[in-house]
Each structure stands twice: as C-alpha cells, then as structure tokens.
Length: 248
Image 1 (tube, rainbow, N blue to C red):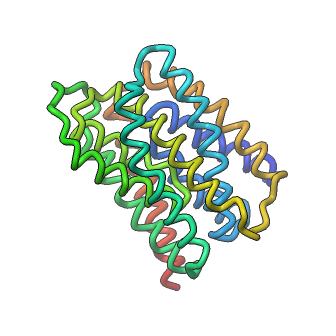
Image 2 (cartoon, one colour; image 1 turned 45 degrees about the horizontal axis):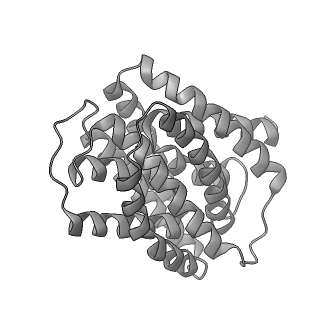
C-alpha cells in the first residue's frame, strides 16, 4: 500500500473517531504516523498536533451548529491548560524517544479505560467544582503538549464527572478544548528543528477533516456504548504494541 493511501486511510479513521466521540482519534494519530508512515516519535507528536488542531476545529463547527458546545465552560477549561500545554511541549522536545513512546502507550491504555468507564447516555447535571475543573484543565493541557494528542479522551469524562455536562454537550465542548490546547502546544513547538513531511501530513489532515464530518453522522446512527467499546479495544491493542516497542 502506498504512503499516500496509508495517510488517507489513517486520517479518515482518526477524523471519524474525533467527530463521533469528541476524542480518542488523536491517540491513534501518533502510532499511525510512527508505525505506518515512518515518522520519528518527535516528528509524529508535532505532526499529530497539526492534524488534531485542524480536524478538531472542523468537527467543532459541526457540533456548534447543533447547539452541543458550551462555550463559556469550554473556554474556562481550555484556558487552564494553555500554559501547561506550552511547558510540556517544550519539555517533550528534550525527552528520549523511548520515554515518549512508553508514555504514549500508557496514555493510550488510559484512554481505553476512560472510554469504557464513561457513560454514553446523558446524565443529570452535577454542580461544577471550580478547583477540580482548573486542575483537570491543567492536566489535560500538559498531556496535550507532551504527547501531541488532543486529550479529548480525558476531556469528555472530566466534563461529565467534574463539570456535570451531559454526554452530548461534553463531546461538543471537548472539541473546543482540544482545539485550543493543541494550538497552544503547536505554537510552543513552532521553533523546533524537527523535520516534517508535508507530503504525508497534508493528505492525512484532509482525510481526517472529511472523516470528522462523517463521524458526527455515524454517532447519530450507532449507539454510544458500541462506539466506545470498539474504540477502546483498538486503543488497548495500540498501547500493547507501543509498550512492547519501547521495552525492546
């Protein structure tokens, strides 16, 4: 299979997940870039931020039109993560590749567990706790900056459990948070000397954007629990592959 075709297929799958679940797709972007498209871990995390920023912004516009984005809540949550995202992105540029790979494997496993535990059905709202919300936002920003993932797999459970949003609103709002944090982390990496293969990144991003539009329609047709279980299984397999690679 050609590099271009691999980039298109991987991008479509990642966009589909982001559009349907509000997160999780970005966790597949880094391993896809490393194992399918021969990127180094450092280049893959930076390229992932480019892909995730563009795709999340596109998916955000779709969810916003249907009234599923809580702008004030999302902006406050995202603001708490901007500085941690920039600091973590700067730190990641100086970390050994094996450490980045192992950290990413652990994060992918955490993503799978979060998706399995997060209810897919709407819940009754709970009173938000500002201190916990700020802490969750800062932690999410750090993960985004360090690993080059959008962090939606953590944002959705946090928005439901910490801020009391209903599930569908949490998915839409998470896309705002992902876009802001990814852009902040990407800004911090803008001056790095890591070479990027735009001949791969551009079609990958384009396919992800198109996939995000289809993902929202898919979410309306397939039950939330089914989508989450399938994606969690894929993430666990990715985590096992990357951890094995880091330890060998």
